[in-house]
Image (cartoon, rainbow over all chains, first blue to last red; front, side, top):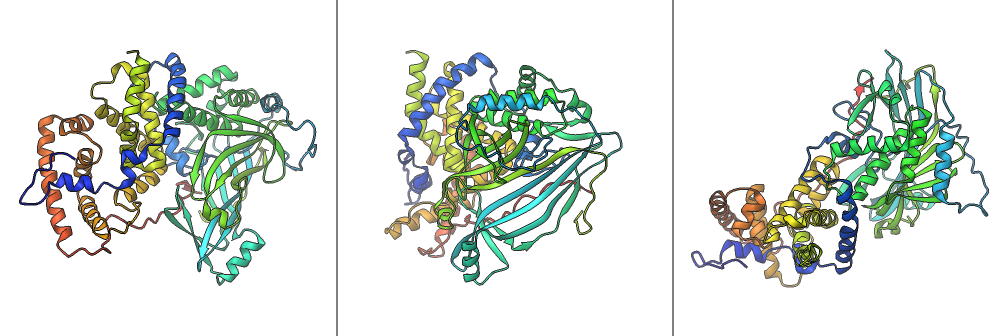
Length: 404
Length: 194
């Protein structure tokens, strides 16, 4: 490529290197006219709006905290409480959650989702109590494809989490995760394949975008873990900020103001040049999280209205969450590649109560491995379903066997 | 030429190169997103795109990758691992032509043994189509500095190639940088013990 000058009879090292370029990096092989065309259309259309809205340029310093937290944990190194897992996990809302589907399947189910979501907002406006501990119970499941002895089968981990956030001075916040924790073959067919593989006590699953990461699961039950989640009076994270109960109660209560507030937080943590769908995703996560916090009813309602108006966010009519409860689906703008295939993230909201029911990751297009293990499009490969969310006067009890 | 026409020309001509570069940093999937973001920036600043555009575009892509790294560490980590696999030839089809594969493996092995800085500089030139002067723009250093750095990086690559060739590298020789990735699920947080 560059000058093939010779040194001591050998070709120039840069030429040697150029010849060794992996095919996967060869621009002529990378051309994908469809994607290229789509991007072009999107960029020239969408960026034109953005120009009008935000005239900033340059890269801004990042408050990396929030999104790194989103990638990893409930409690971030700096002590932020953030309920986002990689796939994000808003949860709940005061909720009786006896959770039987309202079984009016049939007519009326394809009502405009946006209207339904706004009706959730109206319902959310009504509940007004206050207490000492804001308590949520979440049921989670995660499905993976494992391999043992040349056989592949689906395994699932299920567990329950209790989180009790003290909002009065001097009260603490406790989270107990891994209650009733069980890892097992998913279906009877999976169990049969696992047994055929010699019923191994631990199995390896592939994770990462393309299954490049090996992770080991031990089958059977696990122990709960308890942790304190507050840092002094800071009890939650909203975007990059740690907030106290007083901060939460002071959040803007109209959708316009709340959107502005969130947009401002977003701008603190992200460059003005990140894509519009990134922003929608971020805003949806934050709004979804707010709904699950002890905010004022009007703020919760505003959060639903913000969600309903986000560009790129799809609101779908009636859907059923993994616990069989019906609600409105609110889908994130982008799909994500995982080892199990392409997935999309969806929140399920109960329009009749304004409760956040579930946060789930649905398989859109199973990978070959996932398909071989029997996972189909539409499978919920990961979910956190909130079964209870309400005020309590007493701190939760921590099981004796919990790891601290 | 209107700004829109200018952008279209830049886009058509450079999309694959930017994608190749981004893929080398973060793999194909994330690379496509970075490429798309890069051109979104280019569109917003179409009046500022210098000539030639490529070094500027790669500079933008490079910044976006850094930003991703800060903003979403886990996603970056996974993406960078994929890129590393690609960069070490892990994803190339192993063809029948054993000799070619071997040469390539030796070169990639040698490359993998260099420092990140050397590798970045050498590949910008050898793989991503930049002249030394353009590479200086991407790396934000002066031409003089770059000349020195390039000279040294070449010498180190030569040495590494000699080393890699020395033990009669057979077709089964492994690229040094192919390492098994073992990351477990991130812990549920670093909460204080209750």
